[in-house]
Image (cartoon, rainbow, N blue to C red; front, side, top):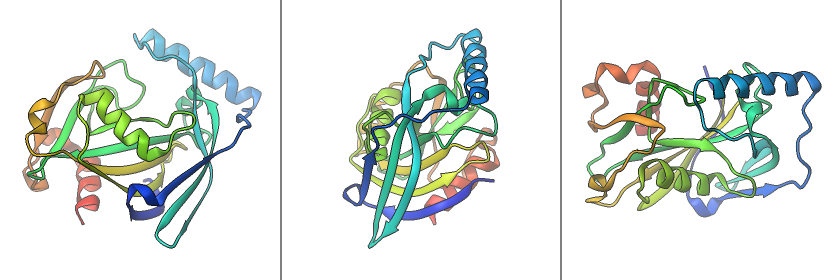
Length: 215
């Protein structure tokens, strides 16, 4: 189960990211594992490029604000099973004006949750980027829409070693009809606002996440 490092909610202007200049230096073993992981990913047909993203170095919560210290690292280090080196990702759980939840089935070639349903949009935190900016960027890239409002919800540490910044985004009324899925998804749907009415595809992990956010 993921570990909750910090819980908001935080408005966008209360989330501050400071990037270090020095790039994270992995061990030789971590480098070999990342090389192998990216090779396997490409053999599955992934167009992923192995550039730089961010890792969490430290964080603090005070006076209703979240302070993050982030440094660049090799993107493929997030693929190392059990040792993702603190790589950061952001998950933008997305809802429409009626409270429905945007869900998409991940394509078979993607790095994480391949062939499974996921909520909203998500991806690595790019170098120099605040995780709040990541939420908005990933929503735009994956679904071709912009959020009317966004809120930071929590910081999690996964058993895999990835630090996940979770936020919620709400679309303006009528924007739900503007959704266009990107190539990372092969199917998508608006799931009901009432989590009890979700389809079986949702699975316990997604239900637990939504119930946690809704509370």
